[in-house]
Image 1 (cartoon, each protein chain N blue to C red):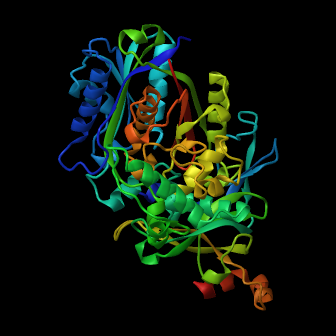
Image 2: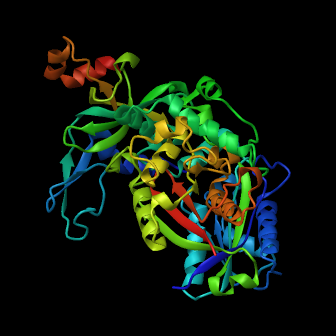
Image 3: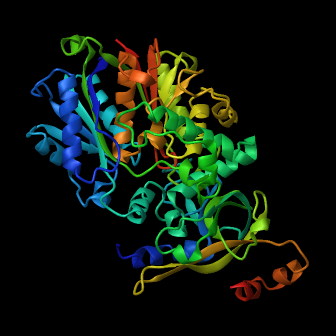
Length: 386
Length: 153
């Protein structure tokens, strides 16, 4: 296995892009990433695109070929990767493996979702497809309801409170204020979260990540050639991925995501570091409770203490560990297929020292954690300078 | 939407009667039915098995924002239920006062309409659960549980 580095990285503005199409968004992210890598594009040998539900959102499948065509990259092999909200990370992993194996020297990885073309109700149904259609959605479950069941159990076993969950949203909005690409560049308070209406108890509207349009892209290159393209390459030091049952009822635990624990264990082993060596991370906060589960399952905080750590500010920017420097899914926005790639773009910017007012100084490692569904897929990547 | 009739029809034994499977090799019960035992894989041998109709609440949520087809019921309780044999499933709770819905509370299966697949589509029926009150009425329920369910519908 060869070492693989990120030599170009870019995101579009996240938000409601009524004037931009799916094609516009992925083209913008890809062109910016290629420019960032100081390439003309001819170096790229294959494309991997993460996208969850374009068939539902814009009625378009076959987006691997669509992306290659729209970028003027025919006849390169171009493959769509799908793992619900973890689609971006599985695309990154596919690109990573392709370069690590020696099959290609340079590949482009993109993530994109155009979610605002349909109504919120229709989008909720599309996103529901990440859960178990026959045994959860059929019974009247929604995606927030599934995470609400996890939240209620965490509250029951560890005394986690709604205010502690709200603190995750508040912190992520605070970080998003400093991210020009974020959907919500504005601060909120715990009171705002507590006063927002219940979606599925105990989760309220401001515990939930929004519906977002956006795209992100990175250019991967064999590390031995990375310095030809950039002075500040970022190495993908580890890539872990694991699976679990789609349905919550079949899980061994409701207070942890086993797929996250396994993906993290594998990633830490590959990178030969531990959770203590991570000073900053992007974790999957599709709902506030998901961030609490993530920071526990990744080993940053002891099981049951994620809520307490969050409300006491231990996950704030430049505190004990900076969680979701981009604003996370809650503040930056969650175009589902793009999120995993955006997390890695944020990690690349942080490791290069280009993150502006949200910069965490003197970083050596950065972790990204992306979950599909209610935890049926989990992907962990560890990035490091070099 | 796609035609839900074949899906509804295929799962009738599970949704109407909680019929699961039992692996004769590892001894584990599974609901819903599945083709491959995750413990024994190809060595596993499944036979149909009736799941118990009683269990307890493991977690719950009151769903306010309902998906299409469920709007008229909102807000409604959704619960993860652990049956008395340890198998878990997700179900709506009905006929249960909000103040009695809590983790650990005993529940029993009732037969209800789940949703209608549009004005001309099939009507999906199946299991929901209700909190067992634990008050004086329990002996009557035990004597004739079918009649009790009918009274509550």
